Image (cartoon, rainbow, N blue to C red; front, side):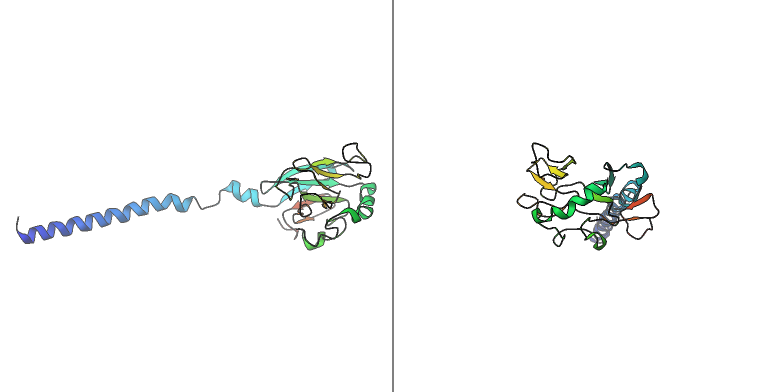
Length: 196
Ligand code: FES
């Protein structure tokens, strides 16, 4: 083999190896890019959801899921709403100044419409699921319990607007997601513009 032939062969080998490398990267990159495209299911999970509130009787609660999170819709009675003011001296953040909610829910009832509480059902301490305890004065929660939510993990308690009581581990009120009503019976969760 002459020196010239040897150089040509080495050049060919170098080019062939480099080309294979580029092709290999191209094939390897394709599934990587595809994996970043959100699936239809992922898109659906992020979309607002509609709830027919006419099916929730007064004093009862519906549990739905939005963006993989539990969302509770409580149809409060007038008696439930009446507890919200008297309980305020016992709350950590009664005016929701340190808590997470849309501006239109920074009020005593923490919702767009007073009778409907729409709240993320996840404790603001470490994320356990609080339990609805709507009875008045049960033995385990005390005679001055007016109804609300109790988290059994470490004993945090919340009133009927999801506001946290003083002296419990949870630091803030339960989170209120964006929500609005598109008509008298249709609640949209995940949007507050009325457009899905
Ligand atoms: S997670 Fe609810 S009190 Fe700790």
